[in-house]
Length: 174
Image 1 (cartoon, rainbow, N blue to C red):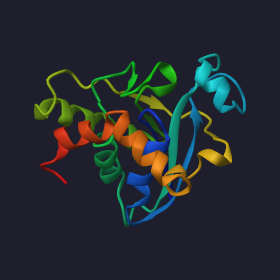
Image 2: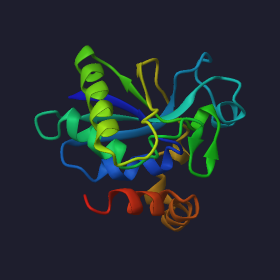
Image 3: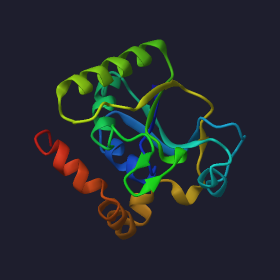
């Protein structure tokens, strides 16, 4: 098993797309990239810790490759916006790829380059590819939010503009 860490705005919206894939053992909502140990949701949202909401994915690369994970990631975000994602603004919601190995770094950078060259977006791909730092799991009520609170999750996914953005930019792939 390997680990991958992706930040794509609200972590609630980043869990389900990965959970639905074969070879995914776990998807954990949490925080990374900051300077405070064991931050709380409130601390992260305040911006005081420097952390970013992210998901840590445990996966079997023989069943679902890191390249495929990158494909799922790109299709969940606006990769041209590093000031937040959709309704959520600020550093704690910026999209990023946190690599855990040199191979992941190379694959992420190549994937970003290919997406930039594809012409799918009219602005440059701005997602940063960063070394993984300590990942802190979020509070239990954030884990698998889409299962625990499906009505609120679906309303948020739609109301934030994420669902419409995904549909308008990726309808030819799905």
